[in-house]
Image (cartoon, rainbow, N blue to C red; front, side):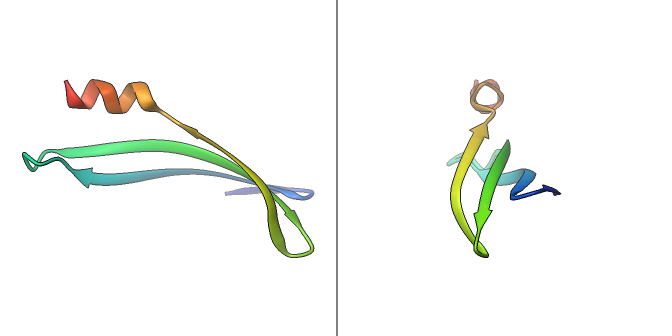
Length: 56
């Protein structure tokens, strides 16, 4: 997590299982714009190609 002015940058990993019990890992990042102590806007980027490769 990185904070700069009113923006918070986060990179994260989530794991889940397919119906066949294979583990799938999703890598993503987000930028949150914080105003008055609340999230006013956010932008998320997900590595969809990485998920696709794991499912093939």
